[in-house]
Image 1 (cartoon, one colour):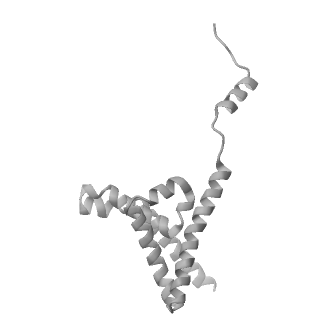
Image 2: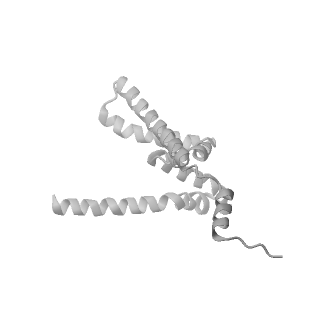
Length: 147
């Protein structure tokens, strides 16, 4: 005997069996974690300024510090836990970029220095560098023509 469902019964069955969307919750968590990463950067900037570091030096030092923090946390396997919890919130450009490079380097380290570490390190970050550079050159050309 074959049991057939009507369209309405099937839709109801699919709605009951489908996992409930957690999009709003995920967005809130991503926002809070991403905001916390930015807040940490602002705190570091404030502390550097408080100790008399010039603003121009802070503009250079802060990205270096944030890359170091992202790389260090990736190296001790903490950033991946943050990423699993926060999702897109952990992909703040500077720390997420550092994480993508370091995690690729760690994953392929066993394949050797050149074919593993050096080549595979930029599998994720390479397109970002290429297209980021390309877009910045195009914007520079457009800017120089029209301004």
